[in-house]
Image (cartoon, rainbow, N blue to C red):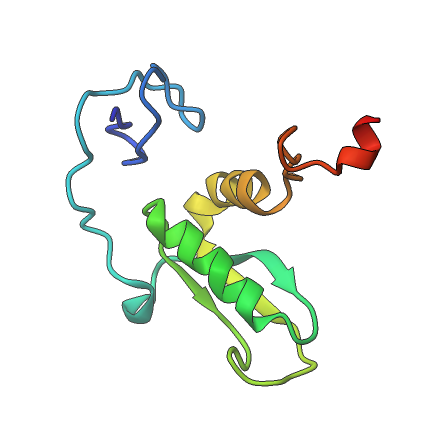
Length: 125
């Protein structure tokens, strides 16, 4: 799969240019990132890319897992995994915010249309 040498973001096969910086993509996988983990952060600002309200800890954890599978380090604030009415903030590096928002929109905000085989036969009559 191609990747951007500037952003270290991996793209789907067939992509030729980075959506973030415009650089042409290189073949193969990106090298391991040298950026410190979020746990060791001091000099890299973190910004919230999504806020999960109320008792939506599972959805927040899912979103974090999606971002991490795409190579974006993230962290959750608040009482994740417990019953809570407080908001949970999904935090990423400031430089990853635009790409993280795009990924979450593609994964979480897109409605899945049922295939013709799954639709109700009464609707097709």
